[in-house]
Length: 204
Image (cartoon, rainbow, N blue to C red; front, side, top):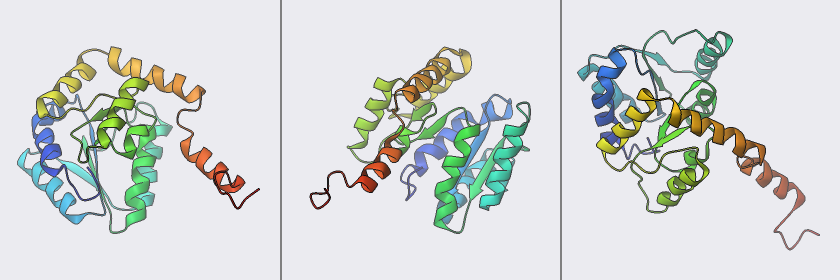
């Protein structure tokens, strides 16, 4: 939702819009409030307003246990249709997105650095203008949506995800193809170049 909760109103309004789909068992939500108490409170308020029951996870161990339970049994479902992840410290807040990526079907996020995660993405309204390029790049790579600037735009993508497997199947196939040519190896390359001293005129 952005480090400072910049899309709080947008994402909470989206939760309200899809609450009937959650109640009907068509969507499960993993909500990461990070270490921002105001976001945890905002999520709790909208979940209460929509009468959506949820389970809370507040430790890194809890996140790993949650992930493991879903990885160990493909038929396993979360205990509740909504799981809220909220933390006191920064590190588990960031690590949670990485950990949950393995057990998530779609990442809903602004087109920030998360636009380069290797899973299907629904990009909601950007905060900075520079983020428009990230959503555009995901569209070019075929692993994420273009920017859904309005709630109706986001709902159109959600309907496509639910009503036909074609879009999600296509995104996953593109992720597999992209991975084979190293599209998602940016961090690995950055570390490698740092070790080798590439770009540093003082290193031969």
